Image (cartoon, rainbow, N blue to C red; front, side, top):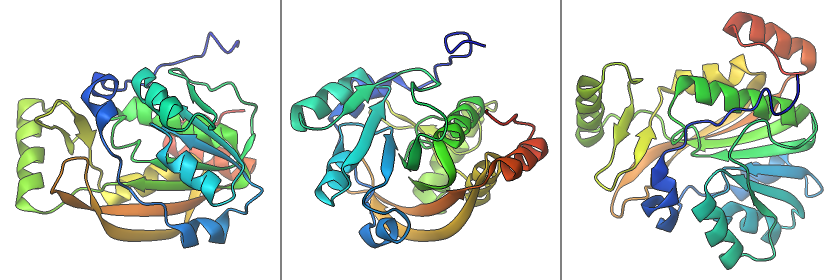
Length: 242
């Protein structure tokens, strides 16, 4: 099957071409965590790089082979203005134009929180499993379901308004659409696509909305070999990518 025949465009909310593209992203890169698993000579994919915040930080830390990719035209244009030295590229469809196993590591920072549909999330994780070499690393940062009154009310109101949406999907007053996951959902999603979690941390993180904080989770997951990935796909019902 040709690349064009199997291309897909994960649903990314239009918020990221407008108001969202002006936001300051907040999830911190844990340098010690990164350096423990990703050497300086690694080839890294920063998927959902936005305006290149983390791509630039990786470059400052001495990671020279980093590729930033984002589906938002507005965010990539902002990134090219702020970081003209960085290789930031807009690709709004999958698969990405890289060979299988092209990367030693990939970053996925708060992308599952904004690509809210189940099918789109599975397509994205399948693509990252294709691109990250066996024994390579996925460094994920995202937001699990919160248990404070404010967030629980958001979840319940959104679920009542649209029962077909996954629980944890909600809108914000400025037009954003986000998803918080049960922690076990994130773990199962990674495992089903051939990534084994080797380290997990929780921390308080500022949100895109001034004055708010959430509990966030950061995960290092290692790409299993082809045989293990096939076994995981059999369990999940998601076929492995070649």
